[in-house]
Image (cartoon, rainbow, N blue to C red; front, side, top):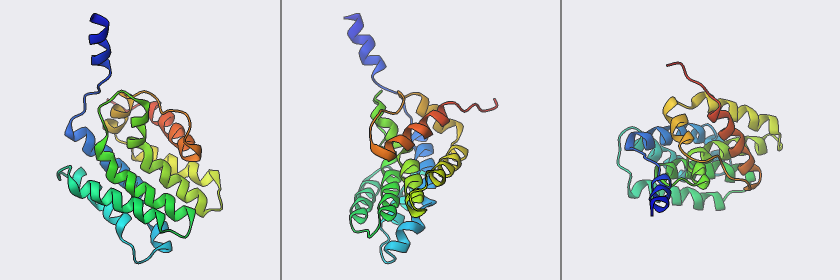
Length: 187
């Protein structure tokens, strides 16, 4: 019985609303950096921008509700209407930004994508726009590392390391995960 209790206790991560707001702000900043890639491909479609705006609204004190879910879903649908892979990845970055507010307090490596997905999709969008140049993605990840606050890094460290798989975006998530976990902040 004691082992079951311990397992149950370690399977949940404590997250407060401010933790989620910091993660959403980080994700929104990452996605915002590549919105222009989507908008160049689909100039009349505001769905990814709306998703990033909803993430910012939550990060700045708004409620976590229908608007976030709806705009994340709309950005996902917008990704399907793109003409280029770079624009699709940019829309997925926006979808991930809005979805980041729904980080689940479960000690599962798959939850890391809620924290880092927007940054990885943004890096992939930039790579693809530059002719699939991994050095461009690496620069985007470096910028994401500089955007991360101590709270974002603390939240990330509560979860297991990013899982394997996921293609190039999964690889970018793992690189970003390792870089953020290795950060130290002055006290």
